[in-house]
Length: 318
Ligand SMILES: Cc1cc2nc3c(=O)[nH]c(=O)nc-3n(C[C@H](O)[C@H](O)[C@H](O)COP(=O)(O)O)c2cc1C
Image (tube, rainbow, N blue to C red; front, side):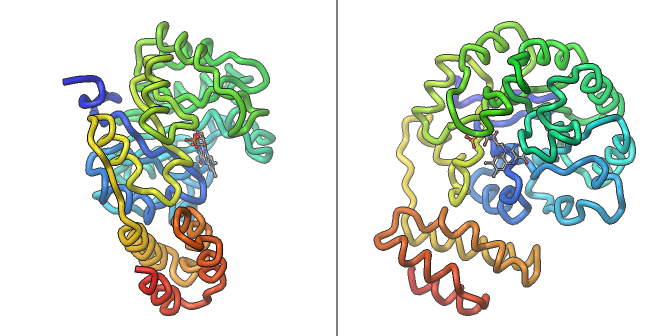
């Protein structure tokens, strides 16, 4: 069996090479259910939620609602101190999630200003305390997702510390906080971390095609690939990559794309009630992409105000 055919271990679970990463506003339960339909065993991530909200009985309610078949399901959380972690972990464990991921990479201004996300990479002392507490409390896999660094690239130093503290796997988006989600990716830094750290390393950044994944593997030797924006409007993306990695062709018809969009709309409405219809609008441009007259179709769909009318319009496209 070659590299692409084998799973890799994160703590006591084994997962395929391609993972659906956390995307706030996108990787909610409806999206994960669609992804699961195509990829029966892939690791799927939640959106990020702060431990303070996870710790309250009324907090993060929608984010914590998931179907059993979404598992393996990693819940991503953020923290800026050790406050609320104990209560958050208790609630997460009660919900039966597969693993917990700590966000140490978010570049958003509000998150960074509170001392969470990528700012923690510049505050190793606090980060270590947070990680030690999670590790002590979690009997399930515990992972961290980070960046190249906050203002300076210290991912290697952070990775060593995380590995020494029993973190089960690391995901890295090798850009500084200021680069947000664009600009050059530092493959050499990732290769260096892979060489020095023995826990599994997952690459996150601009992987959309099998050629991207092969190039990243050749340059870094990472264990897995986390797909973010490449999943948008393409919940079949992990299956596509896995299929193409085996040298087989993957095709999806425009009819199936629309059927998938219809299912998405249905799941969003079940999950969010009436708000599901408006939530669906942000997904429309991603689904209606390579269609003839895509711009016109998108424009029409974006203004539809009722579930019935929207499903009818989508059905007409089929
Ligand atoms: C809209 C959006 C939301 C994101 N939300 C999260 C998040 O909640 N947690 C996280 O760790 N990363 C988040 N990210 C970062 C992605 O997980 C990923 O690391 C980054 O987009 C690079 O990978 P990609 O090129 O495959 O998208 C987000 C990125 C985008 C564009």
